[in-house]
Image (cartoon, rainbow, N blue to C red; front, side, top):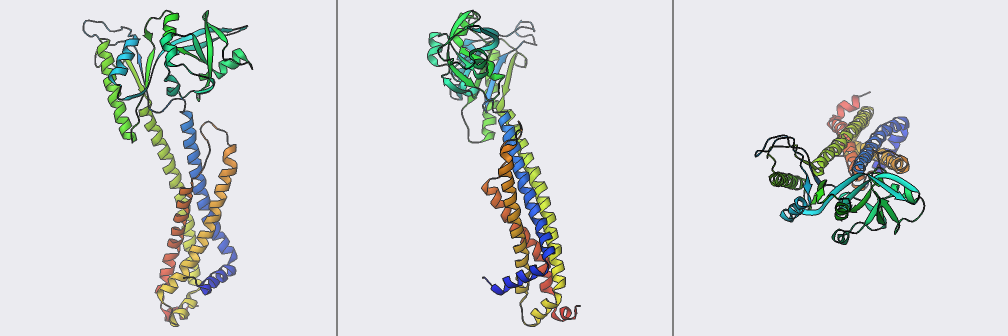
Length: 414
């Protein structure tokens, strides 16, 4: 219940000890301020780390061919394995129920590309339509490779933004003809890649066209897949392990490779790598919460000490109150009200100041591993609840001590 006399007492006590109250408030406000800033910094690091690995979709699994290291079925080690179209076709048929996106790729690393008087050497890759999703490419003009391009072996290409700037400058590239190793291709799209300029110096072509035009038959360099989504990370990890194991066994059996030869078929799964980043982000958050809470505890200890001093100073007053019939509960309430009031007001100031600082400074920080530091509404509410609880805890023990004082002892206090 609202008691105006109680609030008058609190304000009178604060007015009598302005400096002590201000210093106590500063210790509490700084604790909340540091906690929220640390949580914001942790979120910024988490965002930055996530952005650094945005160049590949989560859950991408790659398979590529290597060299055998073990003798198997009469075949000597050192045999170079070559993946082919039927490896890709067999894989997509056998694991159709598990696969969401798929692409086979053939690389031409040093393709000489000419447009008018401009020329340069760039990486050219024959790919499938799903490669756009797998590499998280954004089309800013035109389109990407489609199924009709593969079926009809069309001579079209999708170029990266950096390559477009190098060869076309400010001119529109869509519909223009470029020569790749003296073979003419029409530009049908321009893309950007979250991996940056290095990735944007590539040109993507229909895989079947590359195999036919450049005389590589049915060879492919690697295969990549995205599995269908699951409800939890643990399920995704289990599906990834199952898929890579079964796919690896199938490719080894088809290409006459020893089952325990780990070098002949290379496998990489970002699903397993993602777990490392989940763990890293968790450790960052736990560390910052730990440091921030320790800071708040230091502030709460300061408040508790101040309240002990207040109880000591008001011992005689408390004795008179008890002698006049004041209940222990009212004594506890009197001390707790003052403690909670000081910590809540100081904490709100600290919280507001930290949020304003993050809002003003955060967007201006430019770093590859630090992006958009922020604290969400739920976290802000949590810190306020933690603060109010801390204020109550800080005042409880001094209040309990005050309630236990015997009136006769208090009245004799000097």
